[in-house]
Amino acid sequence: MNFEIAEAENGDQAIALVRTIHFDALLLDIGMPGMNGIDACRKIRKLMPLVGIVMLTVRNTEEDQIQALDAGADDFITKPFHVRNWPPRLRATVRRVHAAQSDAAAPISNWRK
Image (tube, rainbow, N blue to C red; front, top):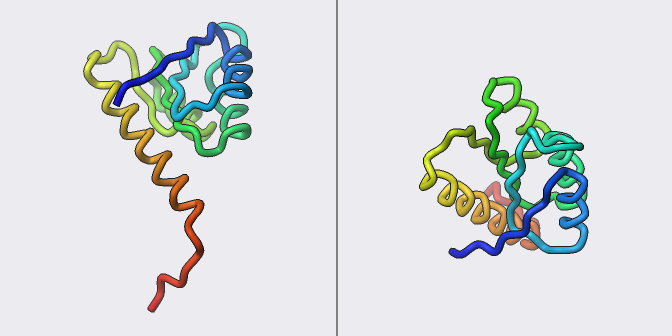
């Protein structure tokens, strides 16, 4: 799986990109200038409920992780990180997003028999 990348310098720019380009997944940093990553994540999640969002940040407290996940992030990676660690986690997020999109289109059935 290859990634095409678009870069945003801040949360407002990330939101503007999400409004114009389809993304399978996003990497956000809590410490982005201007609007922080938590607020950007919350707004992006409202705009694109099925996009994968991975927080990649130096902030590593339990509270930071809870806030990010509660804001809509699917995963949380702290810096420093091993360079080989984030691509498989991003691929896993994309797989979950695609599975959720497929399930959302499936008809509702009675799974209790």
